[in-house]
Structure formats: C-alpha cells, structure tokens
Image 1 (cartoon, rainbow, N blue to C red):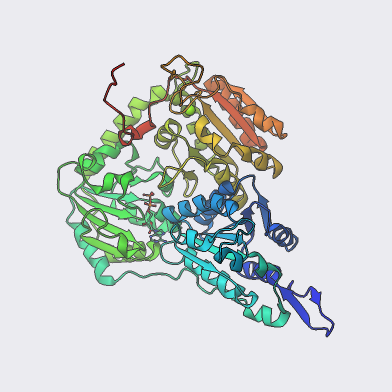
Image 2: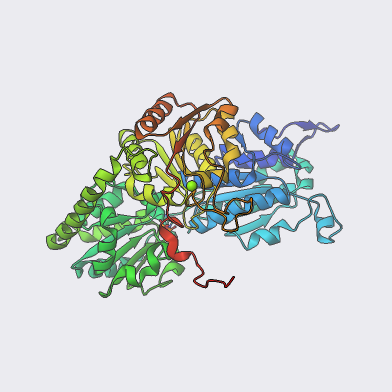
Amino acid sequence: MSVAAVVQNTDDQELTDGFHLIIDALKLNGVKTIYGVPGIPVTDFGRMAQAEGIRVISFRHEQNAGYAASIAGFLTKQPGICLTVSAPGFLNGLTALAHATTNCFPMILISGSSEREIVDLQQGDYEEMDQLAVAKTMCKAAYRVLHAQDIGIGVARAIRAAVSGRPGGVYLDLPAKLFGQVMDAAAGEKSLVKVIDAAPAQIPAPESVKRALDVLKSAKKPLIILGKGAAYAQADDALKALIEKSGIPFLPMSMAKGILPDTHPQCAGAARSTVLKDSDVVMVIGARLNWLLSHGKGKAWGDAPKKFIQIDIEPKEMDSNVEIVAPVVGDIGSCVTALLNGMGDKWTPAASDWTTAVTTKKNDNITKMAPKLRNNNTPMDYYGALGVLRDVIKERPDAIFVNEGANTLDLARGVVDMYKPRKRLDVGTWGIMGIGQGYSIAAAIETGKPVLALEGDSAFGFSGMEVETIARYNLPVCIVIFNNDGIYRGTDVNPTGSGDPAPTVFVKGARYDKMMEAFGGIGANVTTPDELRRAVNEAMDSGKPTLINAVIDPGAGSESGRIGNLNPQSVVKKKK
Ligand code: ADP
Ligand code: MG
C-alpha cells in the first residue's frame, strides 16, 4: 500500500493528492535525497518527503542546494534533486541547473510556481514568473505538470531526460495548485511510472571502433586524454585495462584525476605541455576540446600535425573545434570495451622512445617542484601549504577533495595527487566560484566519506553561509581556506587615496574559522605548514565539521591564477 492512502471521502473512496504522488513517484524511482530550501509553495512538501523517508537537506541559499544536487548526479549517475520555491528561489537554483547542464551532470530542478492563470495574464501574482519559459534556455529539457494524474509521467520524463545520452539538467515546474489536487488513490498509484533502464547502453558502431584502432596503430607518439565524462561513466576497470594494454601516456582533466592514480607510471600530468605539443595521435575520452584544452589547436598544441580520435556519447560533439578523424559515439564503458576487444592479444604498446621521453620530462618537473612543496615559509605561500594537503590526501585516498578558487584551484590541481576515481570535485567547465559548500555537503551525504574542501577566501565567500548547514547536519567536512586577504592577491591599493579599499581586497587578517565556531563546529587558525598539517589531520580523524583559516602571504597569488590570458587588461594610460 502506498503512502497515498491518507484522505478519505464520505464514500470511503481512498484519495491521494499531488503532494503524495510526487513523493511516491520520486521514491519509486529510487530518489533518496532532496537538496533544497523550503518556502511557499513547497514547505509542506519537504516536511512530508522527510516523513516518508526521503532525506531532505535544507540549505541557506538555493544555488548551493543546486550545486549539491548537480554533484550528487555526477557521483551517483542518478539525477540529483534540487527543490526550490517560485520565482526568486527558482532563479537562484537556475544557475546550478545551467552549471549541471554545462558540465553534463544529471540533475532535476523541481520548483514550485505560481498560478498559471494569473502568471499568463501577468496580473501580478505572488512571485509571478513564467519559470518554464526562463528555464528552457538553460537546461537539457523542461516540463510542467498541470494535473495530478500526469505527475508519474512528468517525473519519469524528467529522470530519463537527465541521465540518458549526454547527461544534463532538467527543469520540472510544479504549480502551487498541483500539490493540493486530489484524485482517486488507486488510479494515482497506477499513474506512477518506474523508469526502466533510464540510461541505456549505447554501443558504438563496429566500423567506428575499427577506424579508431587503425589510427591508433599508425601513431608514433600517442596520447590519451581522460575527461570528467570518463569519471562519470564509472568504467574504471575498462579504462585502466585500455590504458595499460596500450602503454599510451594519459593526461587526466581535473575531475578525471584518480581514474588511474596520478602516480601511475603512464600518467603524463606533470608533462602536460610536452605531451600536448609533441603527440601525433590524441584519443580524447569523455572530454570536450573546449577552452580547457585550448580548443585542440594553437600554441598549446604545437606545430606538428595531429589526428584526433574522440569517444563521446554525444554525436554532435565531434568536429566541434577540430576535425575528428575517428569519432567513436557511444557510452564510454561500451566504447572502451569494444576498443579493448578489437586490440586483441597481439597489440603493440606505444613506442618506448616516446614513453621514455614523456617519463623523463615528467620526472624532471616533479623533481623541480619537490623542494617548493616542502618549504616552511611563514607566512605560508601556496606551495608550502599545498605540500601538506598533498600528503593528507596521499594518506587518505578515500577522502573527497573539493577545490575552488583562482590560485588555490590552479596550483592544487597540479600539486595534489589523486588516487581513486571521482574523488576530486571542482569548479568544472565554467570555472564557477561558489560550489565549495554545496559540493562538500552532497559529497559527504552521497558517499559517506570524509571531505576535505580547499577554497580560496574569495571562492568561499560565495557559499560561506552554508557552514551552518554543514554544522547542522554534523557532516564530516573539513574546509581549509587559503586566506590571502583578497581576490587573486590581498595587496592592491586604491590609487585615489580615498577611503574605499581596492576592489580585489577583503578585510585584512579575517578569521573565517570563527564562522564555524559560531555554529558549534571546530575552528582553527594556522600560520605554518606544521600547524596546518596538525589541524587538518585532527579534523579528518574526528569527522567533525571544521573550518581552518590558513593564513597565506597576501602577495603570493597571481592575477586570475593560471588563466590571466583570458582577463582583458587596459594598456591605455589616461592623461591626468
Ligand atoms: P572535462 O571538463 O573533464 O574535459 P567535459 O565536461 O568537457 O570534460 O566533457 C565530458 C564529456 O563526456 C562530454 O562531452 C559528455 O558528452 C561526455 N560523456 C558524459 N558521460 C558520458 C558517458 N557515459 N559516455 C560517453 N561520454 C560521456
Ligand atoms: Mg584569495
């Protein structure tokens, strides 16, 4: 018997309503957690969902709940669910929905909305907005349910749209009136849909596999690039087998780090510029040749002609930036398995002059970096502090590492080695600031593992209030803030000499650790690598919500981190 049997009318006919049908539909499809912010018209819905055994995590701002849902989708291959109130709450959640879509994470933003009749005549309803029309341009699919008997179908369509093919964000619009709509309980139960095989395997065409293997065979200096699509696919064993059998150096994109350990002999992470420049055949697996890979052309890729093989579930991705001579369209698990089978037993691994050259370059770079990471400078610079966190993750390879910031992101990406798949979660395709707390919360809840979140002081500010959420749910999250007093650097001055600070600087010597203490968690202020090590280890051992304010030299950062080239700067000096 479903939970639907709650209202009884005089004829003894069992009734249900929108509230119950939505909850039943979600539960039927395995939804265990909802991330959201309560309010009109979804307050009672949240309460009832909790009463029915769904975990309902209430945030302080919808954007953070949305980021949580998006990364839950990445981690589990099930759509993460975000619940928001109408108009402003919806818009706050929409940034995260667009982020999920851009990053190919499955997510459903469920939002309450105001009365259709009033909204469509623009008569000024409470929180009036045509949310469906707004959402459509920002996500993979958008649906509205007007009748209780369509809830089952609406939820099923949303789930399928989110996870099938290239995953992405889906919007589900639920007008306030729908929640209270009453219908016969038995008919209601029948109207629910359990989605069968929501993300069916997509097997690549055999000739595309053969073509790819022929190109790979012709390579003298092959390279494999792994993207976060490869991490999402959870085809870890097949990917490992392919890479080891081929002997080809691999370069993981940031969220693909750990599919194979960064310390794997074939990992070319520390020889990135060399392998991009010198390779002749590049097999791209679950990564797009977008700005993060310099669009597959130009200076970063050198002058030597290159051939690209691309494995992706989205056929339209092929030739998006450069010619793909061997497109392999399908899900990564199926594609990689097909390639492996096609390689047979007699595959000749990549030539050793190439692999040795890559290894030599990589070892040189690692050796050069080593002393920087062991420096004991006070105030700390990025490297001294990152050397500590690198050790922490090495000793705790199961921990989830969340990372956002500018310099804090760029430098940590290179320095902190990952050892297991889907352990590094970061700003993604948009380089978005503000994912820190939402990601940490969802990562702790979805995986049950401790989380180490490394954030710049600026990045932290975008979702800082969620420290209360972390404390409230008592999550094993240790936030480390690299506090250099500002955006990029904390040293800018206002040239006019007026009272205002420069636009990139924050309060000097701010104590972010006090924020966690304010909500009953643990705070620590550290100024040396040794203190940082002690505080982080303590937090990771205790599993208590912790915020460590790590004081970094305000002069240590560089403008825009590693992407200063994207930041327009005026060369014109105005005459006084
Ligand atoms: P990165 O930022 O790590 O380079 P991107 O987000 O640019 O990665 O690319 C991820 C790619 O992976 C997208 O083109 C997406 O279509 C693809 N993808 C996601 N899931 C799968 C899957 N299961 N099988 C195949 N391709 C996938
Ligand atoms: Mg800073």
